[in-house]
Amino acid sequence: MALSREQIAMRVAQEFSDGNYVNLGIGIPTLAANYVPEGISVMMHSENGLLGMGPYPTEDQVDPDMINAGKETVTAITGASIFESAQSFAMIRGGHVDITVLGAFEVDVKGNIASWMIPGKLVKGMGGAMDLVAGAQNIIVTMTHANKNGESKLLKACTLPLTGVNCITRIITDLAVLEVKDNAFWLKERAPGVSVEEIRSKTEGELIVEGDVPEMQFN
Image (cartoon, rainbow, N blue to C red; front, side, top):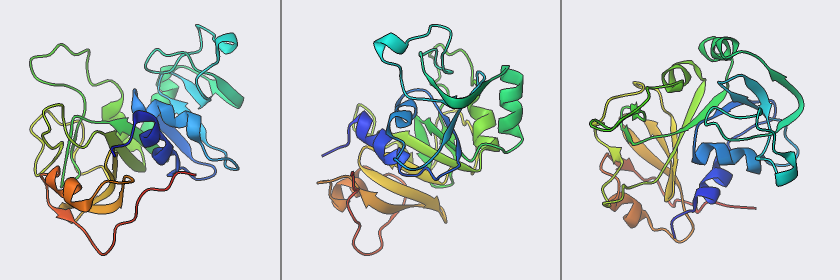
């Protein structure tokens, strides 16, 4: 079965290591803040000026002045810092963010990502995504494997305007965990109950499968 949004976020959180500085994009990536494994300390970074972002607030914790880049209310952990967005982007552009997690419309075998617009639809702009894919040390993409019409979003070449070029290394979809290297998608894990054949049928770009591919584990 395909993963839910929450399960994708849970799998993303398994990528975090103790001491990481992590930027979470809007949507599924933001949910990963709720699933940081016990025993590790991760500082969540928001480009609007918060380092040390915590989980979503409960009703009694809501503070309308404490928001993330997606204008959602958030919490701050002990030791958090608040500063202007110019300083926040200096952290990103200076290479001080270890991991950035963001969604995408399309990715391709060259590590290109299209995440910011669909031609003909009104958009506000690229936002911080261009800086994040250029400045973060490790980029993880979360997305559904196929669009609403059942067409693959893991392509031979992106068709939409690019956010970044040759930049992504890992993709976590509702069906699989994949690495991008050597102009191909390398299948590393599959969602519980999802077959390699289903993943292959929904992957337009070249898919490399080596040996038995394990199912994702959720503790």
